[in-house]
Length: 248
Image 1: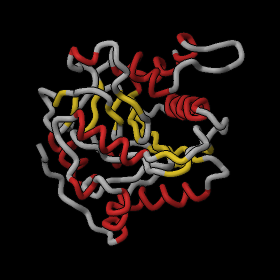
Image 2: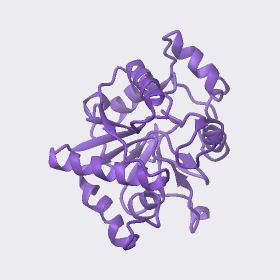
Image 3: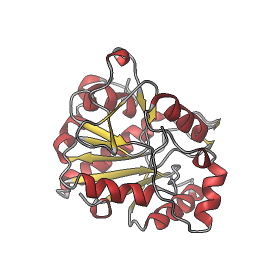
Image 4: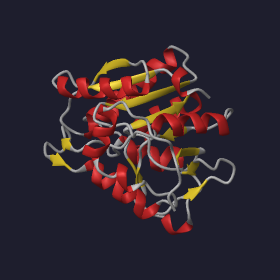
């Protein structure tokens, strides 16, 4: 598995040129090429849901074995390249349905028994039963084995007026990763940036929420220097790349 080789789409609303500029810099920092997808604009979570499904439809039509879908408001961690390279080396033939590179956790999660640089999002501790414990779709890789299952959201949560009961991350948690083996890195690659939300139409402190929740629930902690979004940006502005290391 080579992350560089996976086709990538960035979801960007036509009215958010500021975010397009921001995510382009993030992708340049990683050295990733991508295709822009003009986001479906609904001023609600529905836009994200429909946009992701449309991109998966494109991936299926083009016979992509996997596709990475990136939201334009995520920020890359300075250790991202090093950690991604280590995952490639440790698990070159990794099979999975979903790999979420920047989830929000709301419950305990285990390190994978066979892949020490990954957390096992499918086989969660029993204490998480009945709890929606994994959120967010900032940067997610979808395998072709679950393309059709993603479209099944229209069978499980669709109404005649075109509104989904499930947001896309809720659907993925309930109907994909709980049934099909899925992973995330032991620390996040791409948390969501804080700022104005086109879903809530308010200002959200997403970076703090995601990094705080991660360190609250995950066995491997984010080092303090990467908990602050502004400090992370300063590191990247200098084009510095940090090594990945464990914090227990």
